[in-house]
Length: 290
Ligand code: GDP
Ligand code: ZN
Image 1 (cartoon, rainbow, N blue to C red):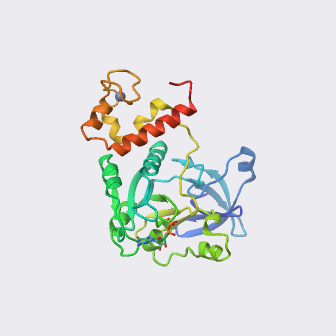
Image 2: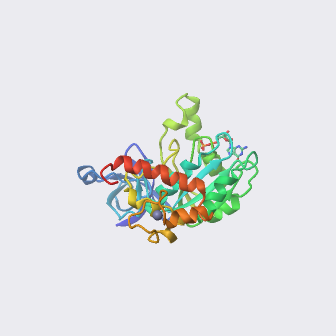
Image 3: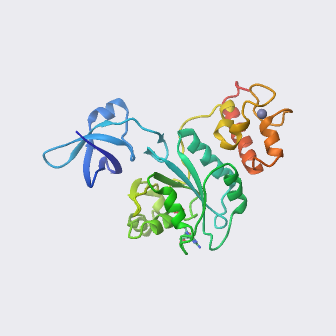
């Protein structure tokens, strides 16, 4: 059996990269019976049949998987943001950081469109949280070398609102990349965003990026318990366990070590605000919990 990684799936036909080759494969029927869907990003074992097509025999254990977009084994989630058209809401960035933490992927912020606007408060908040921050322009090329360096050796995915420049960035990082499928369907009036077709592209430096057109948000399909939320904010971690009350949820009680760190400027107010919003959402889902 040969090992490879799924880089594309169209109409039940999988493109699997095996070293220098890409083999077209179908999945075995057993996956359907077992209710398992092979995902782009999956590392698989396959057999090559006499007609040259392959058959996926096994899916190797996943590092992680998302429900939306359907993709697995992402090493890094890059939040692409912009200061203008559209200006990124810090809450969305923090929510995506939590999503990355939840699946054990690394997270980075990339403020794009630096040629027209900055988003310094967002950069500062996420840098204070310990995340890598890149400032780029897909138009002037600013910051692309640094972003490329971060992506190197990883399988990354871009997330962020429609219009922040995710596909333009990907094309700038990978000259000659053919993202034409989207353009064609746009001309047909259906819009790229209905072509929800995940594909892994290899960049010249060896980094790989999963293009996930039409998905501005990544979802794990998992709920977080209120008491687990703090640990998903890396800058809270040094203080967890130091609060006066066991089970402290860090919302305004005396003797809260996270609250003290916030007052001392070691946690950004916008990050804390996002924590409160996500905590409220988690409490709403688990009303019996607190
Ligand atoms: P996506 O929806 O996140 O994939 O965004 P697109 O890549 O489709 O870009 C949306 C618009 O922003 C397009 O008109 C791009 O030309 C423009 N754009 C992308 N990156 C930049 C940039 O760095 N600077 C400027 N000024 N415009 C950009
Ligand atoms: Zn506390």
